[in-house]
Image 1 (cartoon, rainbow over the protein chains, first blue to last red):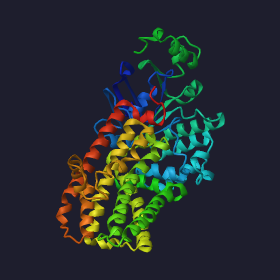
Image 2 (cartoon, each protein chain N blue to C red):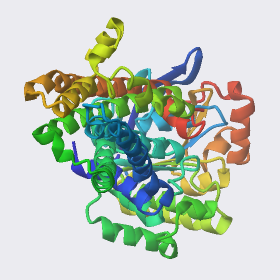
Image 3 (cartoon, one colour):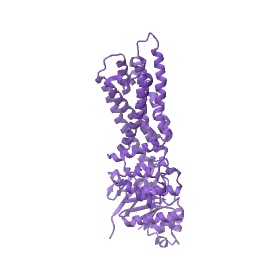
Image 4 (cartoon, rainbow over the protein chains, first blue to last red):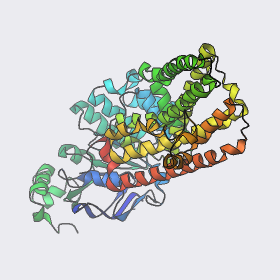
Length: 251
Length: 267
């Protein structure tokens, strides 16, 4: 049985002047699925994520989040999402608890005090409750961002390189928690990463973007073999250096 | 419009202010400096035996009311600048918050912070220079209302400029009240201005407040209706300022400026 889509992107396009950043991209994320959005720098991953977050308007195409059209009902659609990105740390002049309270109110989370307590425990942040985020290590700040991203139990979780600044042990824990959350709930996850081992471990399905276009899609464990590569990292390097050799590989 | 989101923006400002002396002191420090400076100047001017004009309520009162307007404007812009300085646009604008809720939160912050300045100025002016704001009678409420609305409009125009032009444009915002004040007839009557400046002055809501204030000091009748053009203009400017901010925000979303504001996020 095909599970319903929590994110449905159709024919998405965005250009900055003559530079086309995203060119006719279509994909979906299903309930309980972790979808990896992969590609070299400049491929259009963050542009795509920003459009899904509603902070960048597409030139063409539609985005539906949990059945709600983003263009027509932005606030209602975004209520069902949350995100964490390595380039968007929470304000460093507020404490961990203050940040979680403010963003919890912005996402209109009910039972907020209890939810903050749960997340502080889950992400091992209780001892930093009254610490300003600016003095935390980058790994601790990443855990705070992830706690914020989980505040509203989002139907669609967008994670842009969420483990980039974590040590291997913390990264493994974070991956496990996100997998648990995806398996337990009814939401889906859109995940970008340059760590191909992580992608192979975590993602149920991956999409490769190159120069704004969707080049490949499939199971991260089977896809390299299908294209004569030893592993996902080799496939990534081919996408980055010789994308033309993979043109037309999409069904 | 959800009150909880409006409250979140205001609560953030409360969290920042209560833990920071560098944010608490400016709420009243400049007000106190202005009261003391202009209090002595007006006392000196009143010491001339030939004077028929009471400078304390006319000039010191005008300075304080102008300060109030400035504090209201800065209440809006400072709350917005906190997001600029913390590179927080992407986090905030990627939430379900609507523009009306965000601006509502900035205005709520401004009400609280400008109220602190107002209380301090009223107390210091009364205790040190015997200027009682009740001197202005029932018109004090409409005076403050018109100045509050115009201060909000200036604040929203200011944040629109910064959102459109980038963080460095904040230096365009701080002098806004000083640029407007010669036209707003804060210290002198409208008739003092040359004809071309009078046209500009009549388009500014504070002009009606300060003309009314001087009329009260001179014990001339000031019907409430005389403030009506000022009130209508102030409401119009608030509406236009909100429209400007909505347009600038749409531009920022279309061009990717919201994402670039916090980091070079556009791949």
